[in-house]
Image 1 (tube, rainbow, N blue to C red):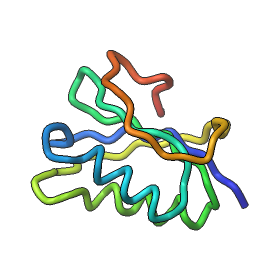
Image 2 (cartoon, rainbow, N blue to C red):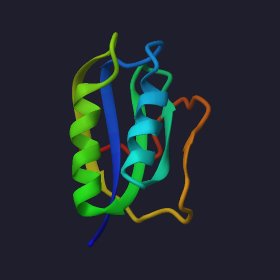
Image 3 (cartoon, one colour):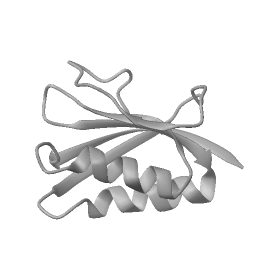
Length: 100
């Protein structure tokens, strides 16, 4: 069953290769979406795919790459965006939607 999430990751997640790690993890799970840095030091991720793959991906976010420290991952369901690729986007001032 398909699932789509918006995830906001906080901790030491910028300047440590976190976006590349996220992109590699998403592509390995064959997920679509994107990742970008936020101005406040967090990272925003949109991801869509099979629920089991999304679950494994979310677990991987908590691990992060060497040098990262993940303090929190907040998520909420969203409508899947069109497309099948996973991309690294430029920085943004604020998230598109904030998980509660």
